[in-house]
Image: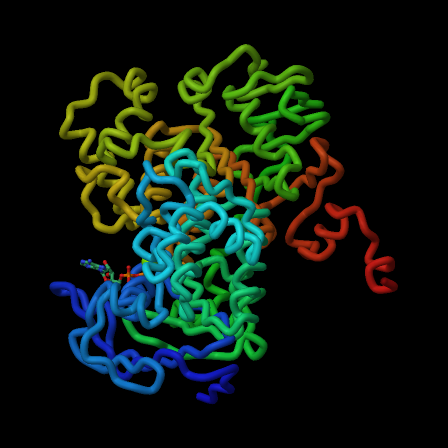
Length: 509
Ligand SMILES: Nc1ncnc2c1ncn2[C@@H]1O[C@H](COP(=O)(O)OP(=O)(O)O)[C@@H](O)[C@H]1O
Ligand SMILES: [Mg+2]
């Protein structure tokens, strides 16, 4: 393993191990991180990325092994010492004081006591710091009033105010929009160019491949390999994360769809107040149909109107042989039309309630049809779906909010399935989900179709539609502009159409 170093080694781990009860979270990890690099940690959920970050930042101490900072082994290491030595972590759970202002949070505990007079100028100091990174935060805003993305920026400024040279960012993009993600990537580059080491923990592999200089792949507590980003493909990364080949990332396409059967769902010239102008498509039983489009193209708005969250303002919808208008979400579910939406926190799950209760909530319609189901039967059904989906831990009595993102997504799917739908709409079913859980979700989608359900799939990872769907429609600016058979086309061709550029123009440019 060659490691062409970009700068000086700032932090080095030698044979670090960390155990939690029966779990070997880290197993003899040896690693160097350097100044002037963005160093990504990737791996499936539970691989040990956060634990590794926390050992570096002093949140956890290693059971065995050595931590070397600036070339000297350290014997005492905790968050306070780490901070003084320039090592900071932006954890997944942010640690801000909600009632204090942005400026107060940033400089909390970092006041320069020798220059006491400066304490009165927190706002000015904040603006000066902020100008360097271009966040545009209001120094006087209360942190509790900020969106998560902005709170994250406050945390980043906090670490900069302490002259951090090593900044561990643990899944910083998971709650950001596409635009905010680009901004954060730019910031990481800026920090790197200033000589910092940014440790970027993320499961967004495209983003990692875009910004990282080096990538360390973790699997089951071990550091499998550290590679130069330029020397690795996404395919190789995923294979290293999974310990198996990526061809297996997608199950075989379900191909025997009878195109002469009446469609389950027929949408004609759909219009909404929310930006859908003219969307038409059909889904047959047993068919996986994709909606391909860029973020903001009107895909989500279309399915919200079909499901009954928003009201259509024009066009027609037919579901299961009936004209489907004047409906709401509850009537849709009762009739067998289900939406699994991208926003599992706001539309989907009651986080404080158990997985079983969430599933019971959804199956109310089905339950009314087949008679009363006892609590025990309810638990049985919940268990069955949770185990098919491989929820970990497999305990349906735990509150949904307790589970990791990937497992929450599985709970959402279990809930949708328990309602026994005829057609399921999946809107970004794998967002925020690690590679292993993705595979489970793909298998589930394929299985549902092969059992005769209609599936409508929206995904910004176009590859998912290209690998799973039988047919796909292109959606742009609120309109369906074409139809493709993914098996006979490429992602590039689709993107050319969505961006409205011809391949010739592209190559001439
Ligand atoms: N504080 C903890 N107590 C018990 N087990 C933990 C703790 N932190 C992490 N683990 C376990 O250690 C393993 C690695 O977890 P983590 O580092 O969070 O993985 P990743 O960030 O790659 O998803 C997992 O099996 C996790 O359940
Ligand atoms: Mg983690």
